[in-house]
Amino acid sequence: MNNRRILMSLVILAASSLLVPGLCIGEIAPTFKETAVTLDGGIQGILNEPETGDPVPAVLMLHGFGSQKDEVGNMYKLLSAALGAQGISSLRIDFRGWGESAGKMEDSTVQGQIDDAATAYAYLSGLSSVDPARIGVLGFSLGGGIAVVSAAQNPEWYASLVTWSSVGDFKPDFMFLGQENFDKAAKDGTVTIDLGWREVTLGHGFFTSLELYNLQEEIKKYGGAFFAIVGGEDHLSSYADSYMAGAAGSKKDAHVVEGADHIYGVLGEDQSMAEEVIEKTVEWFTKIL
Image (cartoon, rainbow, N blue to C red; front, side, top):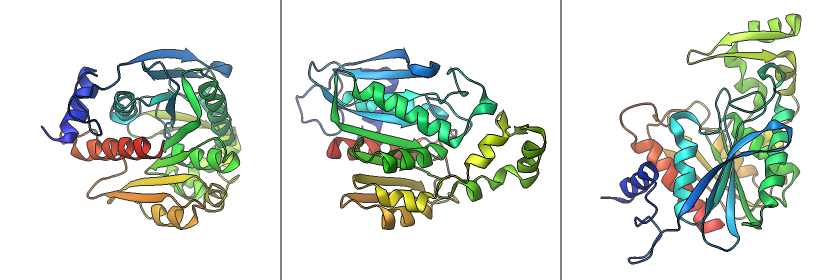
């Protein structure tokens, strides 16, 4: 059984007594537990805590557009368990208006999600079980952009920033929604859009908030460790290069999953690309945090 299969077997079975990558023969992975938590503002999250008895590193996970705290194909849920087996805590949240969190979807904005990340960071860093000097943040797609701004505005918060398939320019990257929907939201206040996998209702404030931040300038303000993962066939993959060039820290790297789309084929039968993303992310956070 190779490392990836060991990792995924651990996640699916929650068998934290199995050997996992990074552990030596004879070592036992930490056990961990997951707890549903409610943060300020009615933000709902899942806290994964390794039972080590000492303060541990932790990762804040920010989901993408139209998604929720476990992410597409349960990639965040799987990652949380894999990190927990390495003794790394995690908190994955639903942004307000999405998933199980309070609020209305049509009130969601980029700034609101940045504020939600700040609320989640405050909760996570305040836990006695977490070492506040060893907190990382991960964002997927739109969540990647949110993570970049959160880290740029508060560079002392995060020892590492990781992005999966991140947006790199908010407004142009959301033009796939169609100019007509930008216009309808401006005229009517809200617009309901069929994304193919679900319907979303967005307010005019969401569309105007896409112009608030220049992500290529924001990344320059963050001096911590940075790691970008992109799919080789994703139209957003080119942003990995510009983020790498702009990131101010000395510890930075990027990984291309060859042949992968925006969601790393996680909804297909072949899970190897999604497994690769999880494995590389665990390796990075284990090394950096």
